[in-house]
Image (cartoon, rainbow, N blue to C red; front, side, top):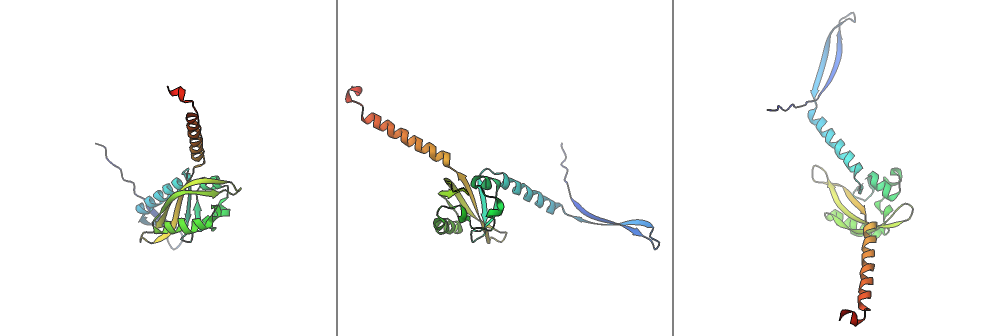
Length: 183
């Protein structure tokens, strides 16, 4: 039978105890158990690294839609630096900020939104994304921010268009075949 070893963390402070002549005569130590705080920090670190590493573009805004955080994928996708984005409205990447404000923000605050949008990179390139948004709540269930997870769907849209063109060509070909081919 394997015995589980539980790791506990202790924060300690140690000071030498001296006599009237400055000679060390002992050691005074104070300790405090910090295992739970250490586990919370490890979890936060794991979550932080995870969000930074995800391949989809992640943005976190305040309730007024001003950017608080973007992950590396967001920076790479849109071509901005973190300094250019933090504190700015998420509308900086939108092709139609009114739609973003009136539709996406409103629906997100109501509980969440999902759909496709056209967004704009720093260089002006417009591209399609699939966006999913949610409200971020604190431990008291109060809204403290908004999170968006976006995927660049440019390649999917190209494939859909190629399929439509192929189907149109096929139907056109079939419609123009002489009736004798089917006899």
